[in-house]
Each structure stands twice: as structure tokens, then as C-alpha cells.
Image (cartoon, rainbow, N blue to C red; front, side, top):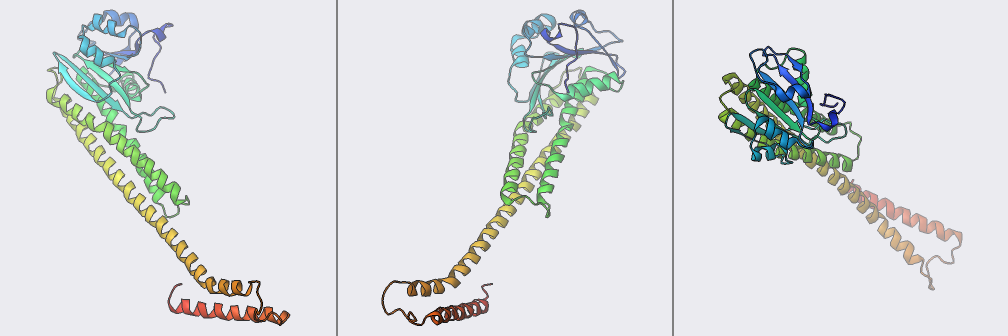
Length: 336
């Protein structure tokens, strides 16, 4: 599901994926590329949101000419640096955020980064790969249930980025529960391999999302003046939610570790049991093997060699007697 929206026949050459002009009442209308070039805020339409492809040719020059963004900030907004961070520069808020990659074929830990720049009237979001969060916020605006100002738009975007983590955590926990099911018929080696994959996913999510906690705290603590009190409060709630999700990831990781240790213990116990049974069998048949080997040597004076067919049955009887005595001894020693 793409987050792009055709702007014109030559849209593939433009950095613009879609644009929305907020009406200040929770709704928005689409804007074309030409309107974007000359848009100015007013009371009825106070905010312009542009979702851009940061890899498009000429985007750096356009950002500098259209919004007078400093060159170091433009470098950050269009670079491949994906570590989450946030700071304010004059009246503008600059941030790099991460979201779960829900594109087909992607792994949960394969994160997608999104750069953000906002000055209170214009909000820019820039991405390289498809990200579902901007589309969700855009659809809410199109249905009249979206944010009303720039601060609300920023907090709504961050909230959606964090909320979608819960889907991945639920899936990981469901996978752990499925592997822990007593009726799971997978071999222990496959279960251990699957658990190792879950642990890697948890570690990657924790490593990628922990810096985002610090970035959101920077937004709440050091946001520009246009970031209103209720926006700060919403960011704080998002931070608390992210902290809970990070704690859930730790719990999932520990659950996977406990299950992995349990499966390894089961596999080791099964191996030991098999080796124990093989040892008993080998111990029981060792005397019999010794007798048959001794009687099978090709030398003179072998006992019962002249007894004809009766000799074979005598040896069988002797071996059967020895086998019975060994079983009685093994049972008395509680070997099985």
C-alpha cells in the first residue's frame, strides 16, 4: 500500500508524494505542485503538509529556495542517517523518526526512517521507502477526523509511528505462545531456531526504538513556541506508551529466552535418555557378543563343535539364560 498520491502526469520526477492544506477543523484538502510553490498561511487554511520523497533529484535546492532551510539541516533531512533525534532550530522543529516496516516481505526489525521539519505553518515529512503512517494520517484528514494545527499534526504522526509497534509486539508474543504450546509438533531444533529469530527481532526493535524515546523527550522538553501545551501533553503520553512498549519487548525477549532454555533442556534430556538406553542395550549384549565371538574363532577344541545340531541349541539356551539373568539384574538395579 503506497503512501504516494499522483500529483500530475510527471509526478514521478517531483519530490512531492502528496500535499494537504489543513482547514483548522480536523479536515484538509489536496494541493497540487503549482499551489505548493506559492502557498501562504491564512486563518481558514493555517497549515500546509507536504509528504516528500527525499531521494528526488533537486530536492535539496528546492528546500533551500522555498523554505530557506539551512544547508546542514537540509543535509540531515535528505541523508541516509536514520538514528532518531530531534531538536529545534529557530522557530522550526527538526526530527528523524523511525517506524515499523509493514511493507510486504519486510521483517519487523527492518525499520523505515522518516525526516520531519515544521515551522508552525508548514510541516514537511520526507521518506525514502514507503511508510504507512503518513497515509493513515492523510486518510484521517480527508475524513475530517485529523489534527487541526501543525503541533497536532506532528504529535499525531509520532503517535501513529509508536502505536504500530504494538501490532509487532502482539505478533511476537503470539508466535512465542504458539511455540510454547504443548501440542506444538515442530522438532526441538526448529523451535530453537524460531525462538532465536524472535530474540533477534526483539533486540533489533529495542536497539532501533530506544533512541526514539530520547528524541520524543527532546520534542516535549525543547519544542518551539508554536508547539502548544496540549501537544506537549500528547507527546508525553506517546513517550509513556513507547516506554511500555520497550518494556513489553524486554518481557518478550525474556520469555523467548526462557522458552529457548526450556527447549534446549528438553532436547538435552531426550539425548541423554537415548544415550542411556543405548548404553543399557550395549551392556546387556556385550557378554553375549563375547561368547559368540569366542566360539566363532577358527581354532581347534571349540566346545560343542562335534555335537551337531544339538550344539547350536545348547549355545542358544546358554545365551538366553545369560540374557535373562542380565535383565533381572538390570531390573533390580532399576536401570529401566
